Image (cartoon, each protein chain N blue to C red):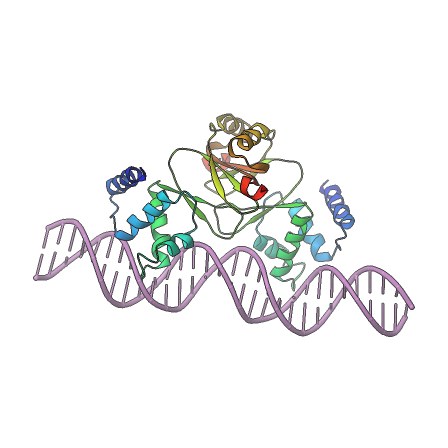
Length: 141
Length: 141
DNA sequence: TATTACTTTATAATCGTTATAATTAGTCTA
DNA sequence: TAGACTAATTATAACGATTATAAAGTAATA
C-alpha cells in the first residue's frame, strides 16, 4: 500500500520540523501515488479539483521543501520543464523518445565510474546521474 | 590545431547543404576554440565585439542547425540555461557543484547498462547520458 | 537581371519559475 | 483563551531563457 509510504514520508518531514499542511499532504500523495514523474504544472492541475485556490507557487515552494528534505528529486531533461520524482531507493530512469514516458530502472550504482573519474580529473566526486533513452514497448507497437 | 577541426566541421555542414555565413563561422569557431561549454548567451556576448548587430535569435537558430547536423550537443543540467558542446569523440562530463565548471571525462561507453536496461524494461535502447558531480580541484583549494 | 530561397535582424510573445507583499493559519506562551 | 509570533498560502508581478514573427538583407539560380 502506498499509504505506508506516504506516512513514512510525512514522519520524515515532521522530524525535520516541516509542517504538514493539506496542500503538502496532497502534493506528496500525488507524487507517491501517480507512478509517473509529473511536472509542477501537472501536479497543480491534478490538484485543482481538491484545492481550487491553490497557487502554482505553493507547488513550487513545496517541491523545493521536499527536495531539501531529501524526499524528492528534480529531473532536468531536455524538455522545457522539470519533472519530480519521489526518492525511494536509488534507481535510474529510462525514457521513451517517442512518448516521453519515464520508467524506473534498477541497477547497482556505478561506483567504479565515480572512482575513476575522481582519479583522472582530481575532482572530489559526490554523485552522478544517468539516463537511458529509447523507445518503449507501447511505442514500438 | 583547432583550425583543422573548424574546417572539418564546415565541410561537414557544406555537405549537408548548410550555408556558411560569417555568423555561423564565428559561432562554430567559438564553440570549438573555447574549451568550455558555453550557454547561448555566453556565445552571444563573446561575439558582440565582432558582430555588434547579431541577434540572440541567430545564436539559437544556428545552434539548432548545428545540432541537427550532429555537430553540437545540447546539455541540459539543473541550472536555468542549456549549454552547448561540440561533438568530437564520445565522452562524459564531470561538473563542479561549487563553480559549475564542466570538464570532459573519457570512459568506455556503458554498453552493459544499456543492454541490461533493454532486457529488463522491454525498451529499444538508443543512447544514454551520464554526468558526474563533485568539487573541482580549484574549489577544494 | 529577375526570381527564389535562405539568413539575419529586431522585436514581441511565450512559458517555466521565482520574488514580493498581503492574508491566513498554526503554534506557543503567558 | 488571548495575544504574539512564525510559517504557509495566495495572488500577482517580475524575470529570464527560448521561440515565433515579420521585415529587410544576402546569396544562389535561372
